[in-house]
Length: 628
Image 1 (cartoon, rainbow, N blue to C red):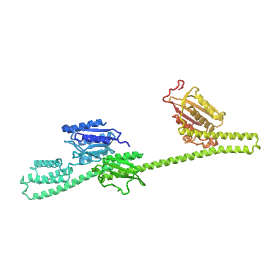
Image 2 (cartoon, rainbow, N blue to C red):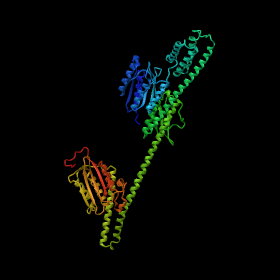
Image 3 (cartoon, helix red, strand yellow):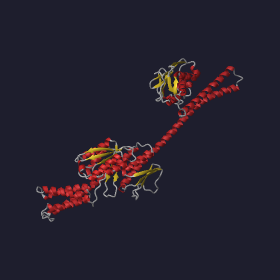
Image 4 (tube, helix red, strand yellow):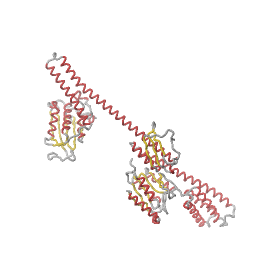
């Protein structure tokens, strides 16, 4: 299956160049175009020179890589508006992959943690359910390259960095400032609740360590500033010790619950991403028809799911002692997963250089699940191929049996008549009269001619259907074609009334030998199905697009459903009896019409009317004497 469009979302956040580079890597091997969405915010005007230069280089690299650049202006306070812009771009461009970063500078509102991330994934999943989201997580070490994840990753700063403690300090300062403003209006014990709100926010944005430190800092600051005596850690009222203990317990409990809720949300998002990867693979495999398509779809799913390259090794098998789920970390990052059908192994999926952060049990189980789905699709493909081969063999056998049944009867009857007549002449020649002797010889001649006609029809039909005969078309007079066909029809036409409705000077484009043979077969068929006094009409009509040969008889016509059956090999009209012929003449007419790029059909109108239409050539000038 052909992948859809890749959408890369960049802004002035320091990750634009990395995003475009990774987008260029994902685009390699794709035939579809890709698009870069530049989200221009108000805060981008106050970004550093390095950040603006990073964005400019990213846009230049995208243009050089053939990407379509789309600019969109956003207000700094419109986070939902940003989400809608990305979703609209993904929905309007048949996007299958969305690549964006987890970083932002200043007051840029970006889908990051908690509800904003959930809102974005829900919105994108509703508007474009088939799109796969990739998040580029910025590494903290300047010597390590960023990684691309096929799922949302909530990456926090390291605990030993100043950025990690910037948020708890800011929260404590904000809570202290608010308490200082309202301290004169409330009892000091009520102020501790404001700090608990700040502790909850830190727990949602950081881990348990930061929230515990925030709780302790809140108790110390509250005791230092708002509890008498101020600027001392020795409160005069012993009840405050009980307040501090309750605050510490509540803060620790809230922090623990918030951290667990955040971890559960991240796990749920990861689980949803794996489910989406499996769903997308199943959707793609439903339209894959060959092992090559299935392998290509599986490798694309592996790249989207874990950000690694893979190979399909058909025909190989895993060692007998290999574990069902290779959950042991590999030092070189190479993992092998079996593609096993119900009765036999089909091959191996080898994932090369799997990133260390993706060598988790969940990701390895995801790779095994992707392999199992691909194995089912390969097994289904092999079953379809076997079914097709069986159907072809059955059809070949049916055609062979039909051919033998038709040939055996048609060959046996004239041969038996010839053998019987020859035996009578040889054994009883002196006892029969001269008239009987001549009658036997005429019967032998008629049966030999019938046998010769059957053999000729079989050989002609075989040569026409096998492609051994190619039409050698030229401009032919209609009068000559009709006279040659009447002559080839033989004595059967001598006693018949044949009306020719065609201009002698009309010129048609055809292979004269093939069209004459087809016209002869149509005339013989009309004789066989017309009463002795019936009239046969041969007409040739010219139109701007094609020319039509029609042969009409005055027989009983066709029964409903016989319009297509009469052109099958060895088909005979049950009502015609022994005069039905070999059953190959009309089949030859159908092949002749098809070789000329036309078609033949039959209808009932006071008898059977066969019409063969042949189009005019596209590159051949028509003669001047052609009548329209």
